Length: 370
Ligand code: NDP
Ligand code: GDR
Image (cartoon, rainbow, N blue to C red):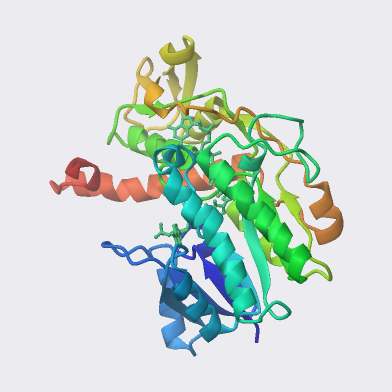
């Protein structure tokens, strides 16, 4: 039975990957941070299952900023595979916490690599590094593939650039099986609530159910190549099953503006919106409603632009070319963007219907606590 260690197991990708590896018969170990509120909501179902059977899923407290803790956990687990998904992963927040982003995302990766070396596991343990399309940053070529030059545009992107190269360097210097997956944006109902897709699908559900009247967003012109996290964690696993370690771009090959994602999400909930105005004055207005449950009415302004969400430097356009992954890994995305949008909107509608019921019954709901 293979053993996998996942950093960032409490995040979106960690949850899908843990599920996939357990299905494949792995023993799965994860590193979670100590937090004042419990942070394991995305993996609680796996944890419970385990108590009914043998222990195949175990969590350790830890942090990528703490070397001794990383060394101790790796020494205890002796993993066959490490998936380094832990990161301060929010691009805009990295402008507010640049040093922490560097410490976790750049030096955290170095700490993992060094732990492998200190423990002399170079020949045993394979490492997946969660690299990102944010490395491409300022557009140098369209579409972007493994040969496209990097030009990161945020402290997050720069920290991940270090992590990318230290992964390549340890592979070349010490013969480690270490791979970079250069993954383009991938989303799901488990996506963090402050990333743009989930922020949109949550707001659409709240607006439809009458729990909120308006959504505030930043740059509506940004274009992203959005896939489904479930497809992307499969690519991570495939990268560690090859004869030789290599780096791969993982993407859908389709790019879509934020504005269009908004339109699609409302449309899936039975609300047609149109956009008027430009720049900071752009708004989305309800044109028609085809959903009897919907509380919004034609003419309502349901989206405004708030410059607070503009970034000091932006990544305008991401479009990935995953030909290499298709040829060498046999990987292709299964989900189309409209299926992803539907799954996310449906999940948020279900969630907020419960809140709407509670509100109608006189209980205070979460959004009213802030
Ligand atoms: P999330 O933000 O959902 O999850 C990040 C995980 O990292 C969480 O488990 C978080 O813990 C943990 N973490 C944060 N800081 C530390 C730290 N100092 N030490 C240990 N763990 C830490 O990210 P995703 O699941 O979306 O992404 C997974 C990885 O892939 C990240 O490295 C991200 O940068 C990268 N990536 C993501 C893409 C995407 O579109 N989703 C695309 C390309 C790359 P907690 O739950 O306590 O916050
Ligand atoms: P990104 O994802 O920065 O691409 O990083 P995010 O969803 O945060 O932004 C995508 C684009 O939408 C624009 N945008 C907004 N973004 C947020 N979060 N909130 C808003 O209100 C808003 N309005 C417009 C942004 O400006 C941007 O252009 C994600 C993360 O998962 C990274 O960890 C990962 O490496 C990359 O994807 C690939």
